[in-house]
Length: 314
Image (tube, rainbow, N blue to C red; front, side, top):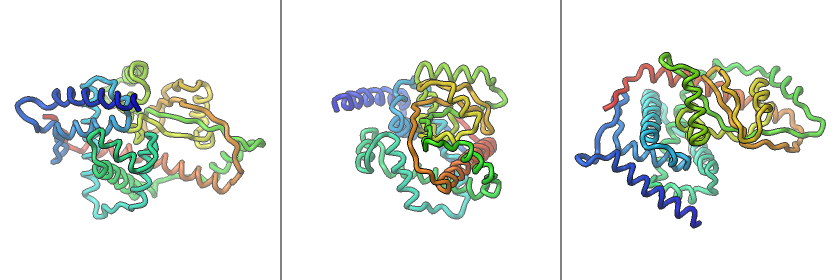
């Protein structure tokens, strides 16, 4: 408890220092950037910094300029998604889906219930309703991506069945890997080797979670790249081979994947006993493969929208 109080005091001082840098003496409110007709203000930047830091405390260790740029890019992404959402007639969110995602959020930061989550957010001057609005944008965006691309999904049931057969274990054991990811892309003006080295340097200096927040284009970025536990059947042979070559705490080589470039960190490795249920295993693999492909489509679609958006900086 004492450590938590000390951290909060340090954070408040850091936040006040940062606020003074962002808010100048002549004005308490000014425009930082515009996305089409949507504005981003200095107050929005401060609120986003609080939000991102609440989800990943490691961000308190990065320099102020990087933190401001991270918040700015996060808000630009949100504005682009929101603009696209507003073009669609149906913006309803299922309450059960919203509840499940909120639960997923607070469990990822090791909180037990919604009440704890709300109290935790208040220490960062964040309102739970504001977080709900952010999650709603995430849900509505995913709905748009699904309806736009679901007919392009390519789920090969026979191949997934072969994968299950290939990984059968007579001892009814399965190896699971706790993984974090950094998925990044490069534009026409960037050099792969330079950016790859830059990311790995940031990992060395500030840790994998912070580097994921700054560089990753995956939806896991806000949680420091944490994917969670994945069993070996969910991983492609190429990725599994890379993971088996590293120890817990190490990162893989940078892999060229359809949606960009991928760096994985092996957080932990466990072997579990399981009851064989081939139907359930197949359902899990189908769900995982569907999510993987939709995530790729999501990145492609967002990049297209960003290219066609008018983004200006004040």
